[in-house]
Image (tube, rainbow, N blue to C red):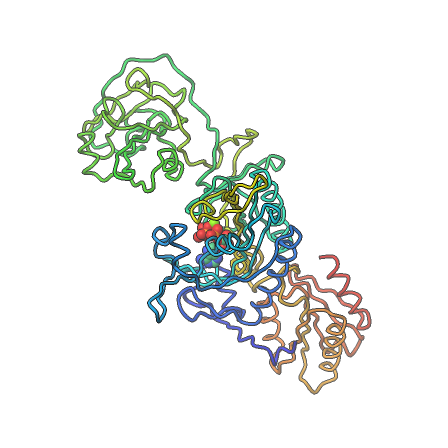
Length: 569
Ligand code: ATP
Ligand code: MG
């Protein structure tokens, strides 16, 4: 490809609305241009990276025997009504009406479409299992589209759906997909973790998210420091073991006046106790009911875990009025002693804890030396806690670490969620009609482009790993088009192109400085620099973008050397 004929309008200035490095570089390196919030043109350089990723994804999907197809983007409301999601999806689903007043949605995911297709076309157990996938644009009207293609409103996704007759078959296929996903992210040159995750609105109870580790990530990953153990989960689901204070002889319950002391720091400081011995009582409104959650003062409630335990759709912290109505005191002084008629959910960090302090349900007062099952009842303990860095791993006891991650893919065991709601059945071996058991598997193709940049860049620009680089080599001719040096550069370019190398030739009539800057910005792994020296000693320089290493190579050896590099990486 000749750069003079390519569409590569690079920019010197950092765009004002770009907050994270990948967004900045994707605009500056002429990969991306916004046309509306969260909606982008993918310029040729970006499109090549997308195609590279798609190819890797295709190869790994095909290895699992998944079959590619293409479903429509425009999806009729009836299908969404059958599954029940038309009313629960909310504003993220982009809906519209056609000229016949029929309602449609732009597909944000395709469980409904595929389930309906399979129910119509695959009717016998003999045709199962089957997995179908597509690579296609998806639409989600995100509340806050941001970070470029990381959280866009239109983006490219690979979505796959598998159909089985038994749970065992689904489990086996899920494992295959897990391995395929690991291979995909490895081949894309990404540092990632597969983490246990919450199944959210899609449903099913077994799911992993694949997280690319990067400081700009919107998710928190808690993972074990012991590599052999490998435990990792999102902060929404992570479990952990925490150190407990030593159990003491139960002491006498006492009320202490704590005027104006509300926060954990204020109260524990005033009472002269460790924050872990002050138990917080948080009142939540859960689908209209009020419940109390008890947790150690040094810990926070994981609302997703709590929501699951009490089987609620929505929970939120109760407002001051509700707190006052139930406890008779202001927020900050609520406690479980004498708290009547509301359900108490206690975190298991309270097990073994005794002689602790709690609010006294009275303004400006706390109880100390509180012991459960003496001063109030706890029937059962639950895990409602956010895991933290420094806690101990539940699997091996090693210390947990805490990373930020970008979710690039997710795999779910859906079970019969969609086949039941959409009445999708096959004829089983015993002649009975049964619901398919399903799995679904998504990968954010365009998000991977940004995630890869978040992991591989320096102050000069992007550093592509070879697996997904738009070109492997850029030939930089430093001299003007009518010089001998230029001719040498052109010959090298032609030679590599003929040999099948993906090579870009910077043949523009601009200054060397300009060419170097652009080459570094767009991050092609190998730069071949042809200048005056090349005439004198018949050699050219190869610069490795990642390390900055410069190697002088005999003009005639260039093809051989480049192939060595491409093989190594
Ligand atoms: P998130 O939690 O980031 O909103 P999600 O869990 O809703 O994502 P899935 O439904 O699991 O996403 O979609 C599969 C994949 O599609 C995600 O793992 C992610 O890589 C990608 N993806 C989801 N939403 C977006 C978006 N708005 N822009 C770009 N990629 C996205
Ligand atoms: Mg997800």
